[in-house]
Image (cartoon, rainbow, N blue to C red; front, top):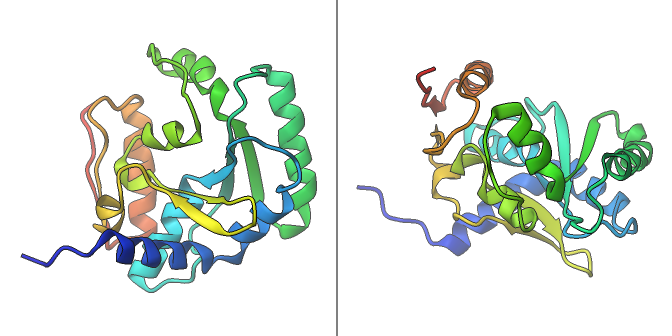
Length: 198
């Protein structure tokens, strides 16, 4: 049995892997004065950067877009979210990558309609990270007021570093999960993905 690596050591490894892609810090820097509450980069660009370090690939390998989350329960309008998303695109357009901003306080409105679920509203960006389809994906990068980056990882780093991607028990959207796993397996063949019955 392999010895367990201390959380602090895991965190240092993951933070180094994520920051090895300079676009993460640059995107957060560019939106830092927009006043977006509870703002963080999450999802594919973050966990894929870790997979890339684990498998010896360039830090931005296989990254198609950058998901910028924020949490504003005071304004759940689609119009406001769209306006913020457009401002983020404008600030980042010269980077040559797609940056998508999403108000996590609104996620339950479209998620339940799309997947036929009855999930309650999220309470924060960390809560959004906690509710991803896999604990392997449950990590985000945020910045302190002084600009120092830090990780949001409610479940720690064991599954992220395991190279084994498993769905959560109450997974919604099994077909899309399986398609996503197949696509990612083609890019990171070293990883093991658990598919689900449809």
